[in-house]
Length: 171
Image (cartoon, rainbow, N blue to C red; front, side, top):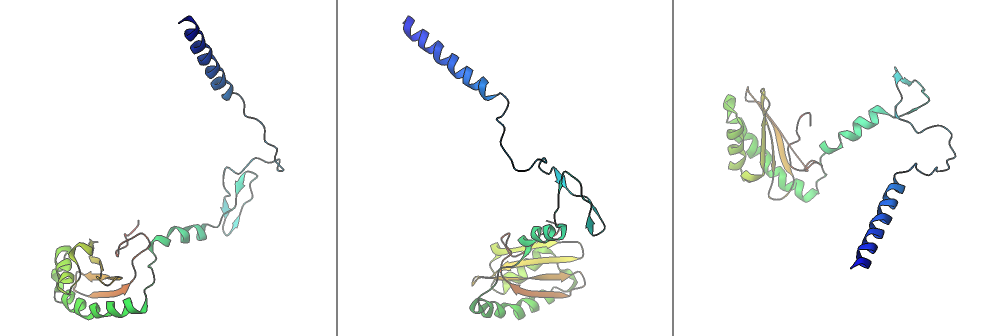
């Protein structure tokens, strides 16, 4: 029994020593550069960035464009596009019939009445009207807007990269 206690104590001491040794100063890594890595983006004055010894240059416009790629729509095959086109005029007529009474529930009902699946219809009341996006059974999306004045804008396209047929505003 005494031997077991001694080996457990020795093991704990060894583990503790290794853990403490790991907390020491890090080993130096050789680098070809003598300057520290950048810590921030370089400030800019107008269109020209102002050099600063500890910053990284970047293209803000390119970064913003890349940030918006989730809104892009996937492309449609000619076959799916042809099938989707059959929804445009019936959906336009159903949505136009709402007139100034458009709200998310009525827009959803109008789209469902032309054969779009209720569970695949998304709406967004933005105060000046209702935006919508609906996935068609054949694939692709019917999407658009019904204004409070009853004007209808409707289009077809692929789903957005983020998923679904209705992109969120300011998202």
